[in-house]
Image 1 (cartoon, one colour):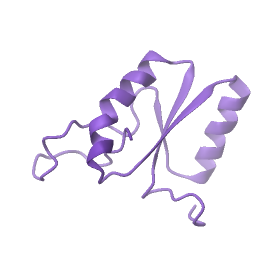
Image 2: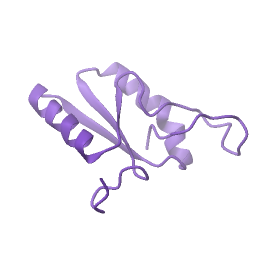
Image 3: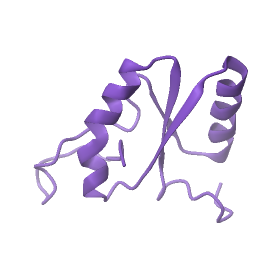
Length: 97
């Protein structure tokens, strides 16, 4: 669910009617490496922040549909850390780094 559109919407495909959003948006942090994941979790632990993670796929229509709501939540709750992980870019548990 959530923020998952990794490419700009040019309007030339079948998904062009769906709401669009950037992966990294104001209070939403894009995680693309395991090191960045560990850094953000460490920062949240140090600062006592709750972490909200959106694992998504750029091809998923529901992910693109929920993106604006996820962005709103991130703006509404700045005391939480909102992360987005594109599962196609960063596959945990498969040895990918």
